[in-house]
Image 1 (spheres, one colour):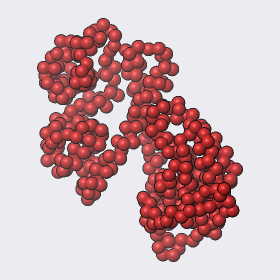
Image 2 (cartoon, rainbow, N blue to C red):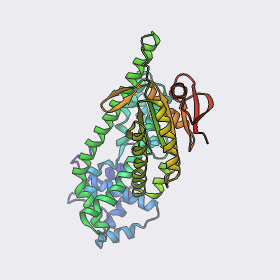
Image 3 (cartoon, rainbow, N blue to C red):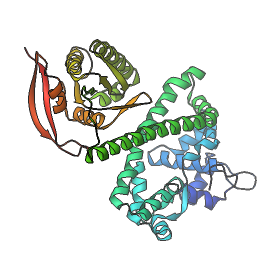
Image 4 (tube, rainbow, N blue to C red):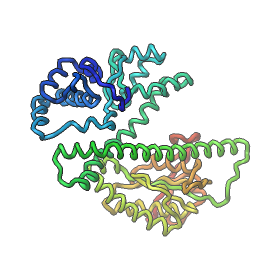
Length: 405
């Protein structure tokens, strides 16, 4: 049933869609937490109120207390009638086992959908949620295409890992940034009512913005894959011409940045980002480089020559170490890169990113290609050896760089 459906529900249907016993629905009616219309029927908003009340009860909240608060006007759940809250999904009319038989999809794979979203692993006889049904056709397509169950499971877990963080930060932003601007000091009821008024427009606009940003990231990832595939194909037939003066790509990351900002909040994250920006811009420009893009916990850098890139990396790591920032580490690789739409692509970019992931706090780790083109006076290199880097076909010979004392 669509979240915009105008169908009204009788009491058994309300209980079924909410996943509760009919006795609980009767109790909620007695406490005036939900109320039938003149024909004794209920709305989709009542389904949501029932689900919320059931969740609160399981958490130890007194339903009598909730009913009293609603009756005295201390708070209201009327905002749950807003169509946007249809995202609080109701239960569908079939179990995972029944869905597996109907779709021909292994039940274990279907149950991964709920677990990947972040809920407890279900049982075959548990009923499927309506939002989970929206994901099933994609799973069916991958099964029909021949993708292994393990491969499908991995992809199903990728989306929620990132999206859950977006949703949590977005909700926090609502309460810390938007609502105070709109209403100043508001009580619980006013906050919820304000959210209900704003949801229709804000959700639509946020969805469009999120999808546009996702598509932009897809375009970038696809372009990167295409370019790297073409590079590999040309090299395989001896048609990949190397340029004489190789540029360098570097990635600087801050160790523990994500956990630190989660502990200290967005304001601390903004201050750290501002301080890092000053260090990176000042140092990279002085050595003929430039920051290409900021990555939350770090930055991607481009240098026309590897030598100055090494010096800049060493200076940045040292400067960060003297500041209040978490320790930095840098990965640097030299090689051909391709420029498109303000971004750089190619295997060199991929290798530099993987080297940065390998580097430890306070280290500047470079590829053999950097060492071959940047034998600098005053800089000492210590060989790490051939290293298997994720996403890089061949072992990569790596070196740590340091200033000689």
